[in-house]
Length: 579
Image 1 (cartoon, helix red, strand yellow):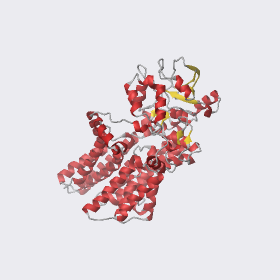
Image 2 (spheres, one colour):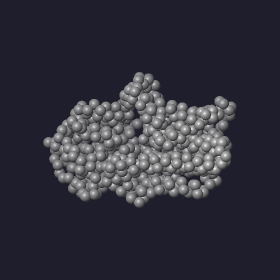
Image 3 (spheres, helix red, strand yellow):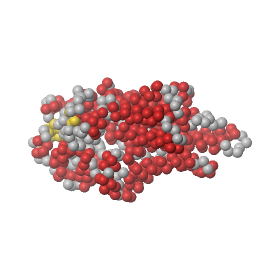
Image 4 (tube, one colour):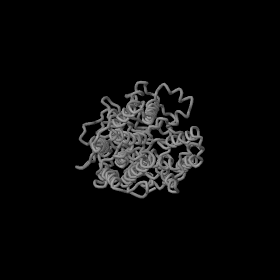
């Protein structure tokens, strides 16, 4: 395999850019800006709790007591998933950074191998293909991959490279080992079920069009599928053996979007992509592909480009119309349509866009160097200049859209500021009791913060938990939900975030929705609550004694014990005791 990398100056320059991308994490440590939405507010905390619970390898029926008075162990996923394993052997921050580095190195090497051997095969007489191969590989490696997805997107080029090797009967033993590693480092549910379906269609194409029954190729697809099922044995068990509880997901009702709203999602996804499966193709890649399409049409060599674009359009339609209200009855009739999220084919888009990007650059360079000019050196220089400008532009755009820069520009807290361990330790000492002996909830503050710091919470964010608990928690907030239809729908139709949502006029819930579904309230913000209508009797029945809030609250059922902040803190925490 290594012979296909050819470690040369191009490879080293590209790898250096990848290292520069993650360098701020190593230089700044916990003062780094880290993605908050669906990351610090959830997965990082879940992985830390699981690693410290003593139930990392717990039985099928074991529970994690920190959330919901005991959440089933299976809710927090397989212990064989590499990003979780990292939290077992490292501190949370460095586990996160290590995962970031590993994802990007694998993405870079995998794309180099794929493009060099299977995509950009021919050498242009005037333009060495390395500039395209390594340039596009860097662009792919700098995508803002969703951290907890591991290699779900980042590993797709390497996986495709391996499967194409096997298809051509040019595989080696290392390819089969890598299939196991990719399965341990990726999500079957989010991405690889769709990836394997795509590979299966390639096998079917060979069978129908080429009359070629490639047994080894078929077995490799089955092998990866079996690896995923073995690794995700907890998920498989819950699907086929059943859980000891009814999941809140059984009451999901996401089919609420209008036809116009769905069309807008189709347009936005095709032109810009989706944040958890970002491809960053909005500007430079779109321009390159469009230019290639124009050239290809002129040269009557447009089939491959057009086919790829039609595939991307189809994926965008699946993504955009998955939650169309008109499909609700159809999903009720055919359960598979509701449980299998076909919208997640969009997790393949980053791979497709970047393959198309490389192919387009190659076609453009061929066109320019093929111009009828006496001095071919001019066309060579022009082609190199255009390719470098496009690739450098895309790399610059990737740095701008990095999680680090995005959170910085939003003026969001750093990793250290978000979890506020210094302030939370002060609160622990002030309360002065064993954290297992009482329960807390948060208002205007992410429950992940208190959970990260060892508090036992009634509120939280989980993708799967007992429906009975959702209904019980709703009794606490039902009066607030009645004030705001958006909040009511958010909880009733989805409910994976079981928070206390204050919905008074000029409400805090609207701010929560505006901040990417996160509570980000700086200590200098002038928010306060004079109208909070929650059921304190239910809170006390569930064992809650304290409320931690990021803003002052005026309510006769709560006594302010103390406030906590310091010169370096992002938050000002108000500690209330329930009467």
